[in-house]
Length: 447
Image (cartoon, rainbow, N blue to C red; front, side, top):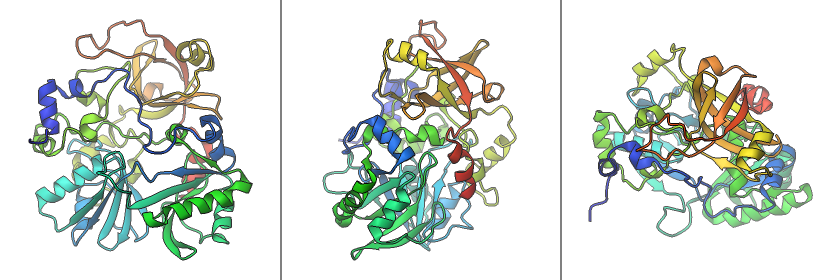
């Protein structure tokens, strides 16, 4: 039996939106990791106030890209600067379509002169591999899917993050001394009782930390070492629920809709992609509904990636981004601080709603109508309310602007996009993104 393609799914559904629209879709949470260890509130506070351990080993899709043309294929299809990309460094890799819409981002680590590791949501990996095959680049690929899609066996790599104000103290305890000072998104080799792996300088929600990456055969030993050394410091393991929330504070919008569904020139790409991959199965839902999939596309400028774009080299989508960088009408990324009383009334039914997580595209409105759309929403206990990352029109992006989030699930095709469905409104105030001051100022400047 032939494996159905993404294009097959679109054709059968009648449109990309009909394929993807799923009201009340369950939000994604990491595989294998327990939903909670100490409770999501305690776990959130750990990386703000103490030290937290996060296990990323099971939900990352890894693709190794090796060969004489490895740098060329990545540079030809990504906006990033490859002229200053050292071995041991990592970057947020950003590929775009010919129209300048983001495919998705990923973490790209340079492991050798002609060898890279691209990790994260696999849409970027698919994009690079397809264009490498079609363009005849001299590269090879090795993939290790996330545990949910792996056909048995263990991951190739472990990934543990140590985050929070006490992170460096814990790391010093584990290794017997501070590890070498490392620039943000650069890695340094480390050894623990004869076991070699790498420490990537990384952080979340503006807090200090490292991501430790190494062969799976060392996973249990390294994990236990952190747990044991962290016990006197009150180390908290972070479960799947809390793990999904720091991006709301740090300003990273996960898994935007890839801009690949409508362009006739990408028909062959859609036929190459499997239907049951991320591009065919990541659902759309919320109170914002449009029959046109392009209304869900985003520009890297809207996501705050303008500084990553290096126009000093030719790349796929460069001309479109040159035009877009002067477009004053592009939406702005902001944080919406939802009114706590409205959160209890609308989401909690008058009570504390508890954990809240949504990747729904909810309408953001002012008295004059539609002003934007939410991208990710989560309860942030240290803040005392629910925050939402949103893209809003420039006229409504100023801090202090009062807006409303329309909380509900549009049923999809068959109902007018702007139908009055009686959905309640949650008052909100616009604040900067990243919301965390340290992530927005000192932390970002130091990187």
